[in-house]
Length: 145
Length: 145
DNA sequence: TTTTGTGCAAACGTTTTGCAATTAT
DNA sequence: ATAATTGCAAAACGTTTGCACAAAA
Image (cartoon, rainbow over all chains, first blue to last red):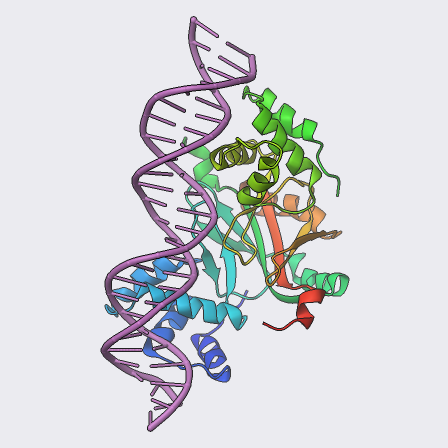
């Protein structure tokens, strides 16, 4: 489950002929370094601390661009109606707790081969995957409501 | 990849002590019969034709209820920022086209065992799964923009 | 009869858009 | 110099909520 380096993301931008701005660099670094599965708002809040002029619009813009380049995956909701992103492109399973909205990655021997199987069976040009199992994490199973 | 009957969904409501209204029956029937992966809006539009007083609120309400009962899964987005639902609970892979926003199911021998593997490895109480691969369907690969 | 569900309208929060100012190239 | 990107404000969109009325049990 290797994390991409921020260089990987930044050079993806450069290769596509897109501009490498300080905002985009900050976003790429955050994506590469975190192992949470941040939403646009989370990224915005985090970077804003050290870069106060950053706008949410730019976060969305950059995420869109990275998704389009196939450098970042859209995970979707985790019961909280906001889109989570994942810069970890290696095949893995995401486990989302519907109560505390945390998402953790887990390894699966099985998932690794699925990509090619699906490509062959469907004829789709695959841009990414979103293997999310949802439920209640061990901690939240104990708590009520 | 068996489809649930509408009876399965309706009796899930009844068993939970919830009321079986004409609106809920119509929604359950639609979910059971379609092999698209409808959004709340799609369900609303479809049923509204024959049941003009139906409200979107009721569709959301019923979907929430069915999801809570574990009778329907939330699939998440398909590039269109709206939540798609899936009444097919048997383990399968969903393939979403990011251009035409269609979602198709495909079989995978591999997926069937994953559920138990994950439960054992994580300690999560699993409520559902959402195995979505996204990309471009054979048709949309040919078209531009 | 009681309690739950419905449907409307309004509120909410996330995401998108238009545009003038800014900045990477 | 040029064309792309930023950031603001406003709009748009999907979804949720409050409440009076209707309907299932």
